[in-house]
Length: 254
Image 1 (spheres, rainbow, N blue to C red):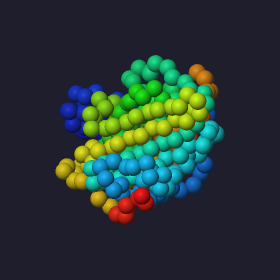
Image 2: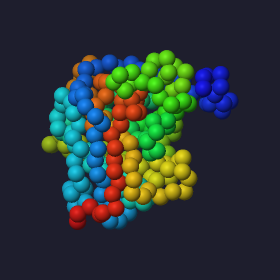
Image 3: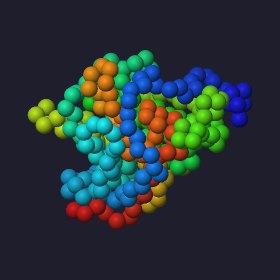
Image 4: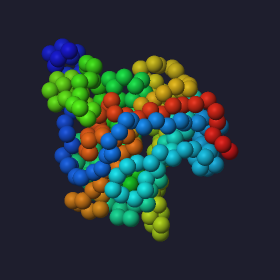
């Protein structure tokens, strides 16, 4: 399917073809297969501190301070928490279009179906600002050797567009000024994750995801950190490289 074959509603929404981000800083992404992690079920409507502590930690790779991510789930939502020491807090006005990636930010990429055809990006800045984007591939993905979408393919078949942050998404960002410990917590509701399967609660199964941190030291120096290895600066164009979150029935240890 080419541009001419896309439906009128896509054109009316002026969905721009996916483009590389303006910033091209150095990063680190170790080669290897996408990672996998088991995700325990929270015992209540939201995780307790003990459940968070018991959840396995997923470490991000990159040249910056240790960054860990944990996840839990319930039938109503997927919960994600990130912790890292942010020694050089850096914020600035977002670029045109609202993306927050040119400042300290934690990003969640999630493909609920796992077919690399439609996925979301949620950015949570150190400041607490949020940015939400939807990606739609109108044909099965064609990629380069490292999993990045082929340039000709994305010019014709990859469509990305920012959306208002759905009110059901909950996200907090807190940094302790004394220790520098930065913690982000995100709640992604089942109503969003199962948009292509309306009315379905979360159940044991597999979601595809990647977690990214941009650690800016100043306006020019930055390190990229990734859970799943991708070409630096290209997680948004690497849907097939997302790792696997296996939602398990057993509850997290109290």
